[in-house]
Amino acid sequence: MQQRVSLNTLGVKSLARARQFYDALGWQVSNEDQAEEIVAYDLPHMTLCLYPLENLAADTGLALADTQTQTQTHTQTQCPRFALAYNVETVDQVAALLEQAVACGGRLIKPAEAAFWGGTSGYFTDPDGTLWEVAHNPHAPLSATGSFQWNGAKN
Image 1 (tube, rainbow, N blue to C red):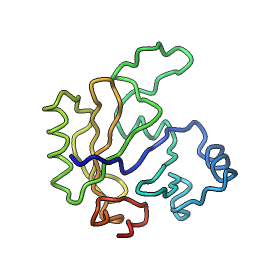
Image 2 (spheres, one colour):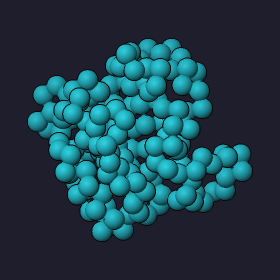
Image 3 (tube, one colour):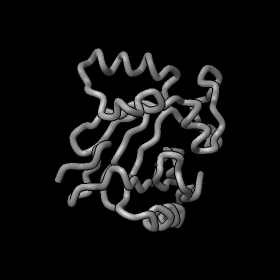
């Protein structure tokens, strides 16, 4: 695994409210055609996504926790409010990287499988429960240096 993060995905209660906040800060949406489902802001070398929290929970298969009653110790059966993503160049690399993460002490949350958006992804957590997505997105190839942008990285 190369030392990089492709996406930071924030699970949000209200996609419209979250987008309004980031738009008001002057950020520019990179995926206007999909922004009713997920909002992407391309940043230098990565993308910040806003995604409905209930969709993040459904995608991972983890239960949506009630943050009002959640304790300081996060259980690995509850969906956290954010996920880091690591994009790879090929479909086969998704499963291989998930296996590597488990071999290093991580926990497999969701095995590599075809995603509704046309790519392949799976999830693991690190030993502290930080959620990572490993994905291959044929619609947004990585640059020669591994940089990711929602609409395809520029070299």
